[in-house]
Amino acid sequence: MRQLVFVHGRAQEFKDSVALKQEWVEALRSGLRACGRDLPIAEDDIRFPYYGQTLHDLVSGADLDDAARVIVRGEDSDQQQQEFASEYLRAIRERFEISDAQVREVGGQEALERGPLNWEWVQAGLRALDRYVPGASAASVAVATNDVYKYLTNAGLQNVIDHGVRSAFADDRESVVVSHSLGTVVAYNVLQREGRERAWRIPLLVTLGSPLGVQVIKQRLSPVSSPHCVGEWFNALDPRDVVALYPLDSHHFPVSPSVENKTDVDNPTPNRHGISGYLSDPEVARRIHEALTKP
Picture 1 (cartoon, rainbow, N blue to C red):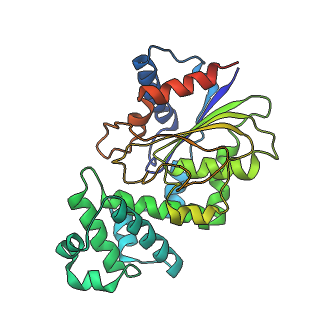
Picture 2 (cartoon, rainbow, N blue to C red):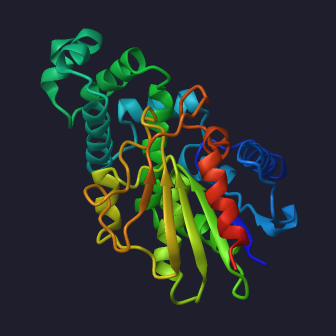
C-alpha cells in the first residue's frame, strides 16, 4: 500500500499540525467527491511533516505585517537578497503586466527611476500589485519571497526543514508526494538531492501553486532536472496565482521527462493560492487517487 506525503508551504505558523493536516485531507476529500471517488487510503497512511513554526521562528520571528515592513524596507538584508527580491518582483510585474505608469502612480517618479535594485522601487511595485492585481497581497508576496530566499541560501534553515520532510518517507513503501507553494521548492530539493541515494520510490510528484518556474528561483537550483526517484510529475496552477507565475514547461522548467501541466485551475480562495482551492480541484484529486491506487 502506498502512502501519501503532504509538503506544505509558508504562512502555517501558530497552527496545530494535526488540524492543518486535517484541512488538507478534507480539501482532498472534497475534490475526490467532485470526481466520484473516495479517499483510497487510511488517514494514518498520510504523512504531514510540519515545519511551519520552525520556518517562522528562524526567518523572521515577527508577524506577517511586521515582517513585510522589514523586508520591504530592506533592513537586515544583503545585496544578494535585494537582487533576489527585485528579480522576483520584476517577474510578477511582467506576468501581470504592471506598467511603469502604474508603479509611478503609487510610488512616484523617483521610486521608478531608482530602478529594481533599490528598495523604494520594490516597495512601489508591491503597492502596485496590491492596487492592480485582484486578490494579490503585497505583504504575503514580500514574506513568501523572503522565505524562499532564506530556504535556498541559509544552510542551517534548509537542513532543519529538509530533515523534517525527509523523515516522512519510508524506505519500504512508495510515496505519492503532494506539495504546495514553498513546499514545492522543498520537496523538489529533497527528492533531487536525496531520492536516488535513499532509493525512494515516488510514483507521482504533484506540485501546486509552485514558484519553481521563476527564473531567480530556478537559478538557485541549477541545473534543474527531474528527480531520479520520481515516476511522473504533475503540476497545477491557477493563472491568477501571483506565486505560481509560470507552468513548469519546456521554456520555464526544462526537464526530461517533461512535467505535465494543468494551467486552468479555478482556485476560489481569496488570493487564488490557497491549498484548499488546489486540492479540491477534481482533476488534481483524480490524479492523486490514481497514483495511490495504481498497481
